[in-house]
Length: 425
Image (cartoon, rainbow, N blue to C red; front, side, top):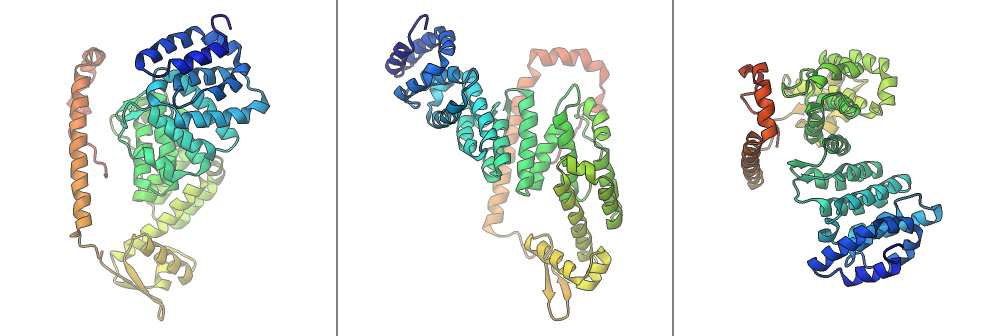
């Protein structure tokens, strides 16, 4: 190496990883030696054994970045994957945050290898990386989407949910938000948390965009399907704050899904199934056929729920005839599943095949319900306070004021929502 040998740099890393002033001095040395490290990349791997990723995190990061900067020989790939996983898990956040860009690059290369080999091996390290890179739980890092993608590929949906519980107020890059909400929506779909999935997909569809993008198109398709499953209806009208690009183009890219929603609205199962059959190839190529089948199943459920509003008792045969099922056995299967999921309250008399529909037994008087209401109130108050703070920051932002001044004449009062959007918490 031109300025320092790799070995002498290891000695410096070992001696200058204690105090903040020492680490600052080490950082200067590492930046000066960066080109030399890259030129000597393959020799650095054995030297990593002389460093502790927890104590010498900054130096370890520079060495690891150099090792993975070029093409890695196949016989070294597995070793570097293991080394990187250990580093990400045990490194000190206060040190790697001095070189966040390098840390992100190393983590993304690790994620690429995890995708190729075994996605599940990358889940825990990437979660650790996200937490170490975050300035607060409200911060959406560029590693969030990578972590969620690994969770999807590994089918570790519950682990993915751990970061989806955080309220996000700070975003590094717009594309990060699109992917975070899209992958997050898919994870919630996998766990059948359809309301949360709707909120995340809604964020993708309505986010500011100057031109339509592929992520928004794919999110819109799932948004249509999840709306039908969760609410039994879908409106093609988007909120006023949606970008004009999305307002104009999203439906045109997703016509089979809009047609499906129209067929669903008729309440006729035969019409819905005909629409599914017509567009089956498209749904399959989009990898949405499983969700489409859940849409069809949800129509049976909606029609059964309507019966509970009209009848107190009904035979399984009558339910099958009214809802257009194949027979009482299939009707019984649907009713039992709906009872288990808490979608209806009913009992089935096995002797005569009669179904008795009941009232909701929950009286909403328990301590648990009171605690949930109190939690929701506290959450709304905290969000309201945060929103007020953000509104004040935006109202003082010079770029916002300049843009608002230029465009003031283009808008009138009717262009603004006077009532906040309603979300289920």
